[in-house]
Length: 497
Image (tube, rainbow, N blue to C red; front, side, top):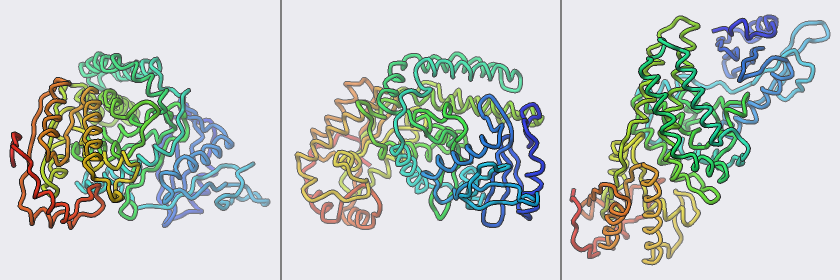
């Protein structure tokens, strides 16, 4: 695909022809903003000499700066991929030459982003088409994105204040309307009514997110085609380098692109796992939590899908291609805005009974997309202690007093999530009657339906399960199981399974 002629500001034919000869038999890929050459072990990206309202690659110096920005922005997320910048320059005899990585780009004819080449069959969009994505990949991806977001500096003058959101949503609606029959006009109008309605009640929250430090220089384009599996690890790449306005955004909105893409492709259970893994690991903000931001998630997801709809419709208008995929994104955008009242479920049982497995199995089916938040005692205990989920707690961490603090933290967090309009699945032993009563009382306090499940299991099976666990937040051992089976749990009024 070549850039629209009205946006091309410089002829790069000489450089492109040289690279085709120099890198032969590399495969060439053309986009509106780049020409990429895929050689045997490396990939070379030449930024096109184009100028769009949102992307300026109009001069050699600008392209060189954007090549370096791409390296600087992407290396924290994808050190496996990004190698550096190399210049293309004239030699003294007038011939073109490809410089080395790190060589100065001053006075270069053009510049290239140099990357390790990866197997594009491992891109997450292709793995999704092959039903090859797994919950283990979502666990690793959630941890990686949370670590990335935590490492970014807050931005309090970015494009994420209430009026910015209003203007952005209005622009989304205007662009969809401009596509006319290439999109579905009734769906466009339903979104034009629903998107502002989903945003306006939460303008105070939008402002608090800015002040709390949730706005950061994020990836900006975190869809499935920009995530690849390398050595069995998910690696996000190709973050936006050309527009701070696009990339300076709420960290939850950054994640929402991946969540939307998974939901759109029928992978709601994986989207639910990704959201939960991210929430379990992401650091808290100054005077705020990410739990309350879930009130914005329907709008975030709908916007991501709506933008994909009008972008795909615009591409279809240029190529003359089918616009049904764009309409499908519109339909997805509308589903995110459909009301789904929150519910509270609690799952109890002794260690090894399968509480977490059951919670994560049921969570995607409960409430609005991408399903319920799993509030786990094992996770809350380690977040309170400030240690990684995979680390073991020190001796003395499971005293009655410590457990009481964990249950209180669980209820506090569950209440925040429920008041944000999102459903919750509580996952804890709930061995004491007062702990089960506290869960039921929370549902009454917030005014949501409650369902309690109690999982029974033979002791020897429970011991075998906890002995085989690896990389889990639970610290339970066979000795813990033996001790728990001596508890007097009292009368169980919850549904037993």
